[in-house]
Length: 215
Image (tube, rainbow, N blue to C red; front, side):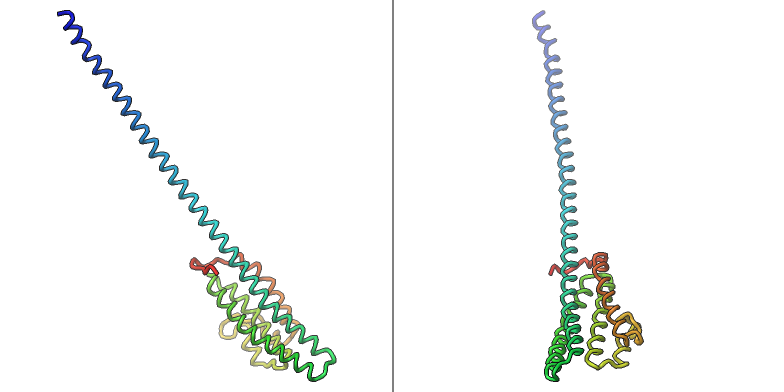
């Protein structure tokens, strides 16, 4: 009887040990699951943060490339035609044979035709790339000023030409100068220099459109 009693007393102890072990294992398992979920959430947040940082770097790189490319294009187009204008101005003040001056004029006219096409492309791109109209408007000033200067040098500067390129014509900024100011070649060139100086400051601060082309 004593032995049977002792065995009966031992059974609850074993059960209690098993329950304790099971509880510990369950706690460990739950803790592992919770810890794993926490690591997953932290990893997911870190991945999202890296993705956001990558997108931001891509946006900055795109904006930098667009601004660099547009400034390079503007510089090439405007400086090429301005150089042609200055070369013709110097030649027109030199003592040249009539045939030489005529050939210089033919070259300038060819430069003007090429410039008109390139200038139109520049303006369209600025309109497409930037939400603000200021970059396009500033380029249009340069375009109008160089156009007026071309017609001045070729003796075709008329009141109508100046009016069409003057500030306020058709409700637009155009050259940014009055018709009276456009009659003065020195003021035309000064306005050109100023607009060319303004563009490298304007473009970096202008917001790009969200659907900005990558080329």
